[in-house]
Length: 463
Image (cartoon, rainbow, N blue to C red):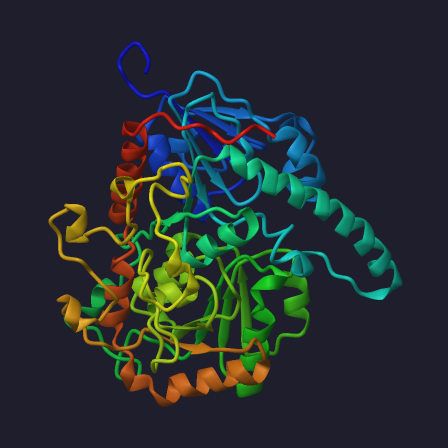
């Protein structure tokens, strides 16, 4: 504690180069602890919200490289050398990590809670998507890359021992943490701004359906994302071109030029757009197309908050946030151990704390409002689950396809259009509200308060 009795908190974030989903999770922490120190590899001033900019940011030496914001992702082999922050004078270390932030070293006996977006995808489950191996030169280069990635994976696994408590953003990521680090994790879903992302205000009254009777819905599909290869937006473009459907693409990225090159005249590229423009399109689109596998996926929930259904790949975080047409894939919420996964064998406590040893320490994750956690609110359950006391009917909020192929995406779009009258925007909105910002802050801060109030934690040995 400081002289005023306040907790001394150190925050760690991979890099501050834009206000994306990870930074929206960081922002409430900076708001609660404005005197915190924030350790990061890179900081592009003005790229994040004023709330984050006001804390004491300490960037690494990489930040001094000229124009580093243009090429920092290529510095992956150097990042471990700069990421071993040895934090002193703190009562709590909180890292938000998808790359190297979790490697921060807490003081002895001080808890280090890692809010993990995913284990480093470049080195683990998506290395092939980031590092292609085509042609002779590509294969030779791949040999060098594989050797580097093997060292990075070893370092990444070793530095996981610096974390005393893991919290994952989804069940999907929880399973990756177990696979990569051999650690358990609790789950707290990221926040969705359902106050900003809303249906069109002029719609008034009950929202229309998607069978052509809603005057606020137009005849186009929508993609909103950074345009990276692993997101597979080539499938969305090819499917709409084949079916003659209008598609609007909002976003930019290293894959944009290639996508533009083979898009048909029915596809419009708007580039990067503001949140206001994105919201306007989500309010008017027939459906959001989401063909990639994501760790969680904020955009599908922003779409549902606007009453827009989602057509997406039945893998990853999407299976936890969208209620699909039919019962082939049933989404579950964090902490739902009845989903039939092998993960049910592991009972979470304070996230991943192997030394807790007692069930009294157990903190069962779930969406805020579970009366078993003492909030006094009604447990939301899965959208439309009448057995859990909700008003929404058990109606779908999207359509899933199970293979990342052109035919599968086309079939999903056609199935959506055949079943248009099944999609009630009110059900989509209800599903999204379960992930609202207030729920995230209540769960995360409650979790951190319990960690601070528990017995001192022994950080794993420093590698």
